[in-house]
Length: 471
View 1 (cartoon, rainbow, N blue to C red):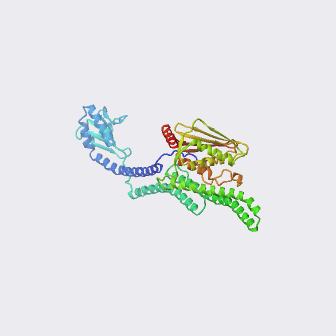
View 2 (view 1 turned 120 degrees about the vertical axis):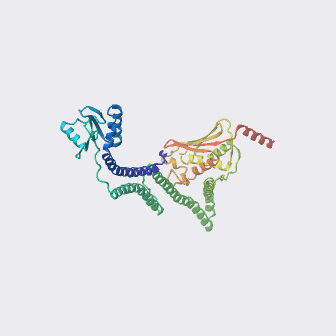
View 3 (view 1 turned 90 degrees about the vertical axis):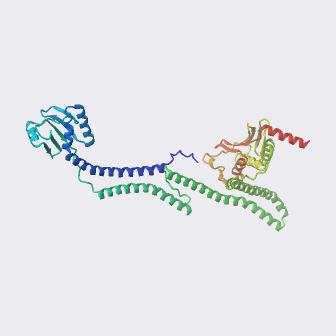
């Protein structure tokens, strides 16, 4: 299985947050627009009703240019009014607009002196106010008011627009959630009805994508498990058929009175029964180890541990291999003194035997199988190397899966049901070690076992205790 890509956490939460933020901004914009239309009208009417008061206040600063300019700037900022004040002779007193409004003509001055306030309703809306309010004209102010607001909004229409936009964004967001969930539900129903090839096909970088990917991975594992079970039935049926057939033939011959032929079949029957016993033992051992290490939390594997000399295990495994595979050459190399290990000698021997058997089955006769054992700083390393057909890179990730066989042929020369490596790894892991494989097609395979060992002082104490018991 390929390594998982790193993902940014909370993508679905971020999407929900962004949709909510967009809706909030939309509603805020609509209400700000409404407030502007509602508020600008009263503000402008208030200024028009009180323009005389403002002008009289500004006129008090005619001889104070800085104060007058500050008062006009405040009016521009707060009331959005552009003001230019000039003396009757056209001299500029102050202005909050650049460039200042042009001075009035003589005719306009006479009209202003007569009417005191002259209004131009045409855009832009301007007012001319005489200073002072009565008497000879001494100065005047030209004011340009902000544009009048449009008609007041229809709040029913505004509410409908807001609700419509919210509905559109909600529908888009809901579809982005509903479609992958529908695909996931469809794939789950199809897989549950027996379509083992059903997958979601959802590729997203958020939590929904993670759920879909987890479902696809689970479906892949279950598919492989179901196929393995079918292969188990086929393989076990094949393994049982031949010895049972031979036993039946031997019984038939014995019933017919042909004792000579019956005796000749006994050796083959004994060999077949031995293989069947080994097959049943492997299946039961693998099941017990799986149950203890995976199904029952906190349970310990059913190991009968004792202190064992690693060299003794290696020697016994080598002797069995030479007896079972006389057509192969076995080179055994043990580097210096091997440490003692605390292990179940029967199970650990079975793991080494399975690795050596695989090396013999998947390599040609007269080739060399190498068995190497050497001590580590706090452990023991055992390697089994063959010069066989090797393993395809696509099969390597599945080799420790029960009942998987990289060689799909059913020849008994490479027989077995794919339990050897799976059982070996379970035994090694139960002892706190690791089992890894390195292989290339046509160049052989190396199986490497690393087991923890006793510390030197513990080994010395154990050897002294054994020597004391022997003496």
